[in-house]
Length: 360
Image (tube, rainbow, N blue to C red; front, side, top):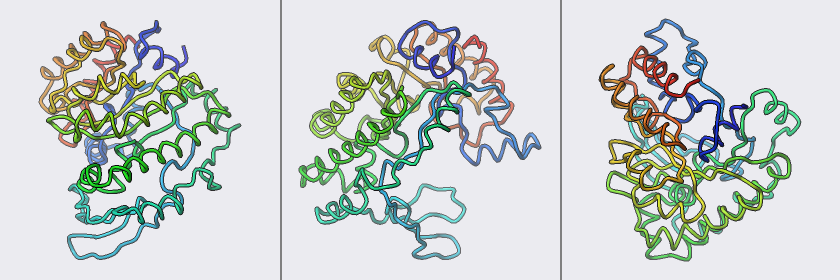
């Protein structure tokens, strides 16, 4: 069975020769983690996925789904400890020079209707030449060689997520109350851009997976109420789901950190059939979710903190994975990128144990 098809069939609850192994962000290290592992092993070229035999899954065609042309990255101010800069999204932020902190966001590109109109006209035309630059014959040859499935959508593109990047968290939340038509227009137009691009991809190859990045939850649940989710976001999701039906796209997924209890049923009502990464420290419990939502494809949900504790803690997560695999529609993985307090040997041990669970 080709690996991309294996992933899709597993998430849909269909028969597979084995459960996909090493798939998802729950098997990827932070940059600092990779540096640690290379130092521990003495191998400066260590590739964890290749070393541990992780399987292929999805590949994305080359396209610009956000601001195009992007803003030119620019350093605005700096001193010995900090650097103030504007990134490709037009966000002005202050970072520590060593990169070991979350940025302080200072300004975002949209604060008013005029800002939005200018951004929409200048950088959010779906037909701007150069947005889709894939070499389709080469892309098809890659698919033939790797067996990957085709995905559209990825970080940082989501209905809430991208609007948040454009306005900032506080700005967007205030605007939902003070300027609801502005927020609705932003979300609707972003969806226009993506669907126009996806139509062009679907004319060239079969799309297997639409991914929507939101990161819209914290420990206590989503940043907006279920009523606001339905009002602002779900009309866009309904259009995405309609596109998926028309083009026979079998997986529509959402990535959000934080607690997902309130989000899952709403998203499933509007066409989403897979989610990840289900952070345990935010209160997510994939076994409980499976009982509540047997039709949901789940990836991840294993507590990454166990990797820094030791073999007994890892074994507990392996057993959770074993039960989840038996329940179906589940691909094992940890609940986000692997942090730098995890030793290489602990990660390797977890991967080898999980390989047996997957039967690969």
